[in-house]
Amino acid sequence: MNKIINKYLIFGFLKVILNCILIFICLGIILNLFEEIEFFKDLNEGIGLPFLLTIVFIPNLIVNLLPFVVFIAAMWYLISIKSNSDLLSLKVHGYSNLKIILILSLTAFIFGSSVILAVNPVTSAMIKYYEKTKAQYSKFIDHLISINENGVWIKEIDDKKLRIINAKTLEGNFLKDITIYEMNNKDNKILRRIDADKADIRNSNWIFDSVKIFDFYETGETTDLKNYKFKSNYDISKINSLYKNLDTISFWELVNEYDSLVTKGYNKGVLNEKLNSFLSLPIFLFLMVVLASIFTIGSVNKSQNLYYVFISIISCVVIYYFKDLSIALGQTNRISLALSVWMPVIAISLFCSIGVLQINEK
Image 1 (tube, rainbow, N blue to C red):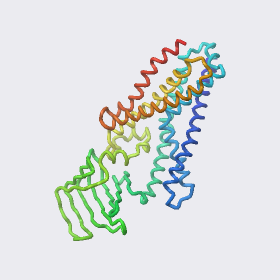
Image 2: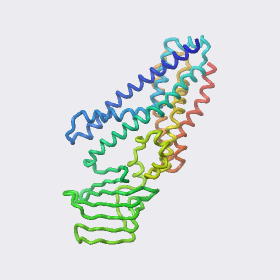
Image 3: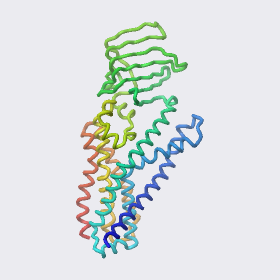
């Protein structure tokens, strides 16, 4: 009998999660499609490519929003079993509030683990395709930062010049083996080339070491300099935040190719943040179900559905901004990046530990 009830709870909850995911997919398609159409509006592309890129982009967005999707699904499911008296029937069969919460939370934990292990590699591949396709139209973008097997590439455009910057690697605050091509913005004729062993890019005033400047426009001469200052639109913080879309890296790739990614120029702290984000997701989902249970399962009043909807919206907003604040603290070195990922999980777990004890007594 218990197996039948457990299956009823688990599959009923998974069905509601799937429904919530479908709703979020529909909303995501509507919102992101307009953004893609705006990007391609001057490129003589039909609706097909923007729609395809939207379909490719949305699954990764859903994975990133999964804690909030599961929280809303848990609220929805618990309200439904309260409204049709299934919750009362479960208690008659010996299921306490704590047991019901534990079954649903473990379901969310296993669901989150499955997403990380099986779904994330697929969504990462889709994001890689998305980034690659958008990069094909990069010539229409004023600024571009990307990384590939040929190193780091940066493109800058102002009113007079186009700069193409290539470096073999990014190590710490330095670009190594750097070459800069400066071209006329009107006819793309090369004005000069700058070669340097390395560039200190801690701020937007880059400092080059062992520099050669080839002037192709005015003097045609080659100049050797020990140091050289170069004004750019970017510094190390902007490059770290823009040129590496970590959503293109799957959990398996991050675990198996960690050293290789560091060699390519990925910051260890950022990679550790992403790894901890993967590891924390199942626990985050577990706690979001517990949190939803605290708001709903403890009350016997069936007429408070609007109140629960309001609570779910407010909770999602608060958790979202608290998570953002925590990551911001990590990125500004107030706390470690790894701790910034776990802070929301720790805070929610402390709140839930108190709430679960209270509702289990009801």
